[in-house]
Image (cartoon, rainbow, N blue to C red; front, side, top):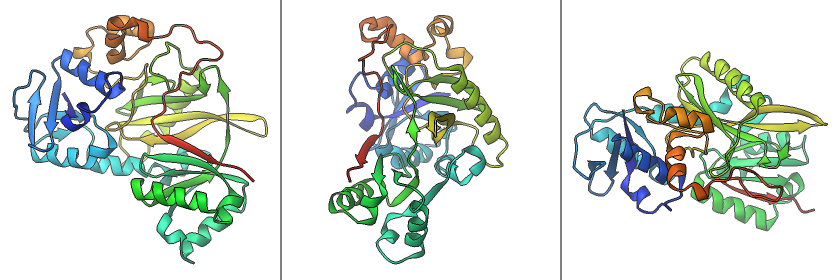
Length: 328
C-alpha cells in the first residue's frame, strides 16, 4: 500500500504539522506518492512520475482538497483504502443510536430561517436545555450557545452562524452541551485509530507530550468498535473520538464523533502506518507509545517533545475551531 498526499496541501503546511510529518515518514519508508491537482500527475518519493493504476492507496489530505483529491486519484486508477462512499457513511455515524448515549439531531441551517418542520423540530429539542452544542456536520467548527441567545436571534450569533455555514456547509449537528472532565492535559478526550474493526492505537489530543491514554478510554474504544463492527454496511476503518463527560456528578465516557481516516489529524500516539513490513522501528516506538511517524520526528528533534507535563502547560492540539456564546 502507498500513502497518497496532495502537492497543494504539502507545499502550504508548516513542517511541524502532523500531516507533513506523516508525508516525511512515508517518503522515508518508500511508500509515498503525491498528486499534483493542477497537472493531474502523480510522483513518487524521489519525484519521478508513476502510474498508480490498481495501486492500493491511503489518501491523506486536508478537508479543502478532499473531494478533488479523491476524484483525481480515482481517475488515475487508484484503489483507495477509504472510498468516498465510506466517508459519507462515517459522516452519518450519528444515525446509529447504539453507538452513543445522548440525543443528537441534524438540522439544515437554511430551513431554520423559515417556519418549517425543521425549525419546529429544533425548537422542540432545545426547549429541554439551557445550553446546546452545535457543530458543522463536516469537520469545520463547533460552538456552545445559550438557548436564550438562539431563541432571541441575537445578531452577533446569527451572523456568526451564517458565516460558518457559508464556509462549512448548511448541515448542523445539535445536542445538549455537557460538562467535560479535565486534567493536567486539558479535556479528557482521546482519539483511537480503528482498522478492520480493531483499535490499533490511541492518543490524547497532543502532538508534543509523551503520555499514556487512560485504560478506561482504551477499553471503551474497544467496546464501541465492537458495537460498530456489528452495524451492517458501516466501514471498518475510521477514527473514533471519545470524551469523559459528567452529568449531576456522574461521569461517563461517550463517543464525541467518528471521522474518516483520510482527513483526520493523528496525534502523538496515533499512526496510520500499521503494516508490519513497514514497522522498521516498531519496538522502540512501542516503548514510548508513540506513532511511528512521530517517533521518527522525535529521533530528529527531541527538543520538541515533552516528557513531563506541568500544571500550567498547554498541550492540546485543536483541529477544529470552538466558540462560545454564553452571555446572558
